[in-house]
View 1 (cartoon, rainbow, N blue to C red):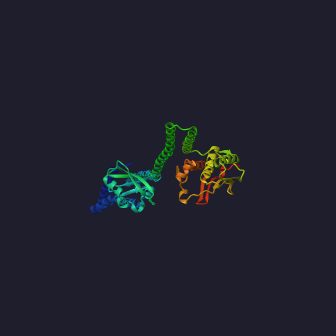
View 2: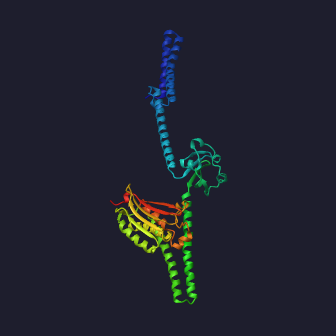
View 3: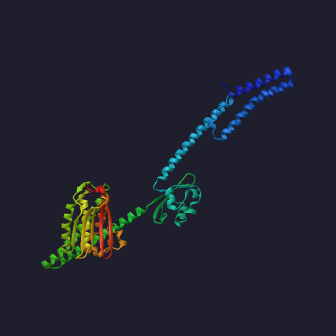
Amino acid sequence: MLSALTRFSLIICIGFIAAFTVMSFWGPEWGIAAGISVLSIPLVYSYINLARLRKYILADSVENMPLPSGFWEEVFFRLQRLVRNLKQRIRSIERQHDHFIEAFQVSPNGILMLDDSDQIEWCNDIAEQYFGLIFKRDVMQRINFLIRRPEFIQYLNKRNFDEPLLMERMGPHGNLSLMLQAFPFGQKRHLLLVQDITDLQKADAMRRDFVANVSHEMRTPITVLMGFLETVHSLDLKKEQQDQYFDMMMAQAQRMKSLVEDLLTLANLESNALPAANTVVKVETLMALLKNDAEALSQGKHALNFDLESPQNLMGDEREILSAFSNLVSNAIRYTPDVGAIRVEWRVNDQGQGEFLVTDSGPGIASEHLSRLTERFYRVDRSRSRDTGGTGLGLAIVKHIANRHQAQLLIESTPGKGSQFMLRFPKERIAA
């Protein structure tokens, strides 16, 4: 392939040859005209190719244009290759950009990118929900115009981002606690990361309440025991009096033992995330055990009725199911006044679900307490709970056992009429 300089030299030579040839026959005027005509051919050719090139560039289809012959073939070819490479690089960058956006969108945290003027360049869907933003509307808006919380504006203006900022009562319903921190990057730009710590705060509050409740529950029997011991040690008591004090001390020790056992049971249930075992549990046997224990606890003070409506058994962990059933029955006996009635049933409903029901004629529970009954140490009447010997952990244990068996704990109660506690097991837990 001839170089551009060689081609240009050949065209000039041809032009001179044509000019001198014509000049020798028709004179100098015609010779000059012939030379100019020959030299203008490549100019016209170049103009035509430039026009074609402009057309394809405007249509953004340079890589598809046909290659001309001659000098412009190489120009078109190199330009096509350059455009093709640039488009490949652009597509690669766009794919990487899309991957980053997808990754940021699936993040459980809110993410916002701010420019050097604190204008929003981008934010993910979580950040939109947290702060009530709409990206298409709020892009390139100053964030302090959109989030008007004083503590946030102060944090942003202070420009000291070593510590995070806690923002409470956030979200569409004002029930979220958010932890926000800014990270500088690039040319005075900032990345804002926002984490929802509502559940963490609730867990921390529950942990503090748990420690306080355990301390309180243990302090009372320990104080009573110490008082009895001091009395027995310092006074010369008769044997009958000593026996009376020892019986009361034994009752307090038994109360602490029950509390520790329930705490260990609850800790074991909470630490075991696996589903419960899937062995056959004979409900008839459980009902017999429950009846014996209930009669011993009631001491003939209640009308007890145990009804096995269905012969079908359960699939699960026998020890856990017995614990859940026993807690519901013992609670009914403890909180139902003397001469009250308690009915315990096992049945399989029309949907094939197993239902264990405990219905009592006790004082009932007000509706505002029902949702909190399964909280650890939650008591509707604290003084009465201690009198009945409860630890305050029974229904929390029942709830965890129900969850491990994919069951529901359903509570209905009417003040002055009584309560019904039901454990409903899915049909997959009913033995064939």
